Image 1: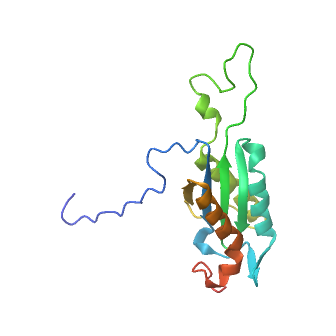
Image 2: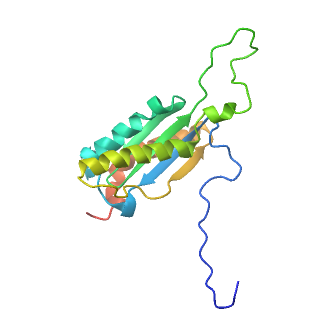
Length: 182
């Protein structure tokens, strides 16, 4: 690097290095609307009131298991400008084939038959963005921020704490830094 060149800031990796995100696990997910725009509805008291765009988010989320059978949806709250969810990646039980020792998939690329968490989130963002833009009378506008937050849930205590956080999120909206008072 030359003396007068500015060093570009590096994006910090968001994923856990070396972790296989197709492995069965529960993940805490947060996805934010582009620019933190409040386009999914509003909080009234302690209840989230979804508008048509928020309903489209919910429907796209609940449609994921039809596309990815090994996805188990655990919890979801759609907020005015983001969502929190717990999503599980599972391994469906494979029927035993005649002469097989187990129901586990075999072959070189058997892991590729299971989705990676990023594939699930990418599909959700795409499906929901298309519908939201249709509802809002827009074409091709960015709905979601580029990345998303994920956390691998490691035990039942952590699962319970995160589940409580998700379920109580609307009641804390008025104190949330994401609430821009709009």
